[in-house]
Image 1 (cartoon, helix red, strand yellow):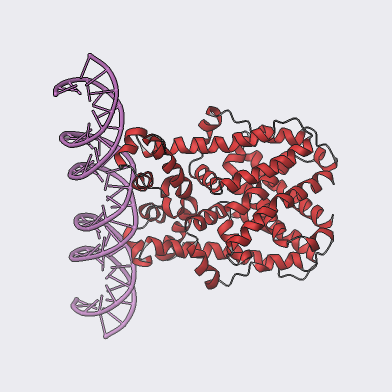
Image 2 (image 1 turned 45 degrees about the vertical axis):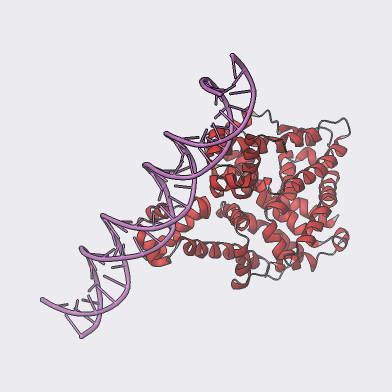
Length: 199
Length: 199
DNA sequence: TTTTGGTTTAACCATCCGGTTAAACATGGG
DNA sequence: CCCATGTTTAACCGGATGGTTAAACCAAAA
């Protein structure tokens, strides 16, 4: 518990922003969550906008840096793909609200993306390379690999961002049942993707 | 142009809410969009909450009623599936911001869902039936059909809700290129799903 | 012990925003 | 023509909210 005031504020802000977004979050609420006086938020971060950008930038890039790690090891393309799926679901499960947070915020203000892509050295092309290099069976050579990447991401991310809806509609709002379902996902998605690529 | 004041307000509200969400929308902005005095919004809809719920309820159920239509004709299960994919992409293309709107709002306040599911006679089970009945080849009998439905929805919806990010990262922010990509999606998704089901 | 610097606090400010109100306006019936 | 009813408007209200300020606090240097 030797975190500085600034760190406590930042972490509280992160929790609140991820849950409620820029528009839904209140500076007072963040101050309460941090157990600090509201003026301190401005003392350390000057404005809400500033604090938010700081949080968003970190959250966004951390989420993509970890993706990058997955793809840097020296194994076959197929193994990389499998590792990617495992790790990505693990990552989302550890941060279940982050995808919805990112999607919401880039829709609210797509401008921030432009500055973000430069500042953080993110190379999303990497995921494409994974699919381009190495995997060259039937369908892939014909098909734009972006279709596969986006299908893959959709299959992985959608169950998390649409959780309240899906859990209610297809699982009688049973939290645990839905959690079990999400755990099964790894194998199912691997299966679907590999079946398609190798077909 | 013989719409009533109430209709003009409602339609303006629909546009604004879908674009900016409940929290991002301003009553004054809706009034301006409708070309009406702000007090009229309260005259006809009493409160922002009310106006929003009215819009959300309609938008939500219309989006699912149309899905239902797709599935009621008398053709083979496979043809139904193909028709569903076609119609669903058409539906989203005609209302590209609606999925993100719905997802955002149910995450912000999942409670409204409960009341909504009763009031509107929506039967999301229908999509499941489509897959359960009729399609009985290899994988399907073993696999929870909800995995397939959710994969399918993910593949269809994700390219729209994550558009700003994907368009920038994978298409150099070229709007037209991304539109072309979205048009290709129908065939690609059909292909992927059928390949998996029939494998 | 006093001074000096950063840190923390309560009180305050200005603006935004949802909502209200009372008066003006329009229209159709008597 | 006048009244009754529904509609529209400008002005206003109060609370919420992001942000500021000046004073209090505290620890380390001198």
